[in-house]
Amino acid sequence: MIATLLVLSAYLLGSVSSAIIVCRMMGLPDPRSAGSHNPGATNVLRLGGKKAAAITLLGDLLKGLLPLMAGHLLDASPTTLALTAMAAFLGHLYPVFFGFRGGKGVATALGTQFGLSWQIGLTVALIWLLMAKWANISSLSALVSMALAPLVVWYFWPEPVLVGMQAVMSLILFWRHRSNIRNLLQGAEGRISDDARH
Figure 1: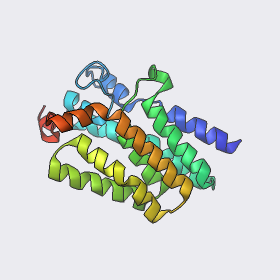
Figure 2: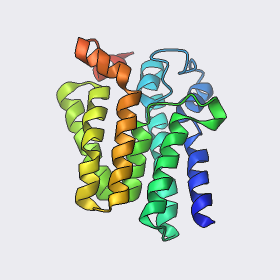
Figure 3: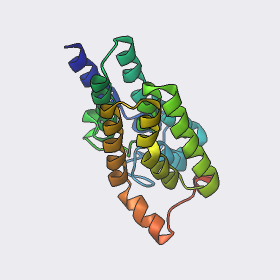
């Protein structure tokens, strides 16, 4: 019963779209109909600048982090933690409160990784930051860090159900980034520094 409530709560929390709420509160365009049409921190950076993007990023991270922290406090099994992480992630992608039109899930996925253990989250975040500094492309940084995330989980917590969960999450992230992958292959993907200047 507790496991079911934890997973359901994770999905409902994940369904709270930080990007849409932040844009409404700050008088910005709806991120689903402006910019890249993606309700995520990168698009909010494009639409409203660094402050709005930082608030959105924090909100999306917490959606993944808090349910996992609750799971640890309740001494949840690895299977329950895996289901909780996936529920929060899918809530962000397919939010029940916003017509099931959500973001691409990178920040919420990172939140779940920090929720599993700070070592996992920090390692994935450092990979993202290093790639961002080198390539200056948010989507490429996300794809590389999430491609390596299952290996990071395996290194720090070699529990098959957690590694499998992260592998599935990473595959879904690649699917959600298919338009970015096309742009990357064509050399047409936007750069972080360009978005930050807007």
